[in-house]
Image (cartoon, rainbow, N blue to C red; front, side, top):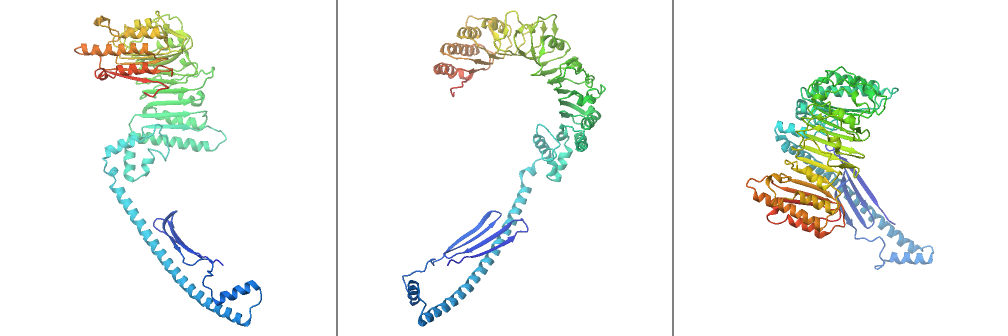
Length: 578
């Protein structure tokens, strides 16, 4: 027979709320002691008994012989055999009783040791908590000056600050009283808020709770931001009724505090109260971004709320309604304008009409289509940066009769091979260009060289060209500095960065690049006051079957002890790790 005795107990740790469990298993041939606390085993001991589970027959006793004979014959024991068995049973009973007492004694010892172990474990946990508490008070963060801690709090802010108690700044108010005091007194933490309006359901009674909660959060942010410039983002998708009206009421009451306003709305009517607000409320507004995804042609509601914003300078449209000129804005004072809508692309007449509204524009970005012949000249005397993406078939003639004497950066994104740049498509004022980028524009190498010859201030040139070997060679030879050239005839004398995307690169083209690199380096040595500081050449090769030797030749040209100080060459190749 197999006898197993299980003893178990537990002790609850009042300080750490952890449970210490101990288990003792006594088997026929082994015993195990395990003490664990919250899935962590803190003690485990195995005891192996010297006794075997099966009786040994090596040392036979008279009783063993009797039991063997009775087992074989199956007969009833005689009187003598019964006496021997009875005497042996009494002896075993006495020994079992003694072993039971000994087992109970050992069990009490084990229980006592487990209680001691629990006490030691609880004392250890208390000390660990004390250590943790001391370390928290001695942590370096507590020695950080208040001013630096304020900057850290600002750095912790997410890009979209929502009224979420699990995220800054509300989370910072829940750490301790000192942090809460700093967070509440630092107005920059509360100077930005993003409000997501829930989808309205007229039958949903929770709509009133949502409106109250959002309005309370907005009022709280405005209050804690004090006099700091406030940035508000409102995302209202299919919102009508109580939510939109209550939120717009708060915005209009605090309109004089708003520095930057971003509105995403899928329905013009949902925020009609905002659009129809009387001019003159947003007196502190400097940046305005509108994403109006209402594409209904019947939309005719004018937006007049921002007409009299005296310091409004930056406007961005991401998705705008077809009737753009129903949005009344002070265009004559705008300096930065960005209009990007991948669904509604402006035609050239609308684009030119829009340009005529500006008087102080410095940076602009547009997506247009359908070039036409310009009728009258548009003067953009303050424009410094212009980015235009052209959709469909056309050419650069749309840039004719646009005067940009201060233009320094020009980016043209075309559609290969439908967008071309020919000899009749010149920008009127390119002498001050410092940055030119032509992406997927079909332009002959000779025309491009002629264009670059007028840009003596050019510092950075980005090109995505699909030239054959002859055109690439002509272009590279055109911007290589030859000994016979005089100072007045040098093309791109201030060039510092040349970034090109090529379909292929062979040895002949690599040699042309080497000539360009070495000529620019030698020019620096010849100048007492060098104009060129560093030439950075970056090439993206799209054909993975190009000759490795051609690439190595180009890399080695810039790796000489002298040229490496002036020229940096980077080549990106899809099939080669360089």
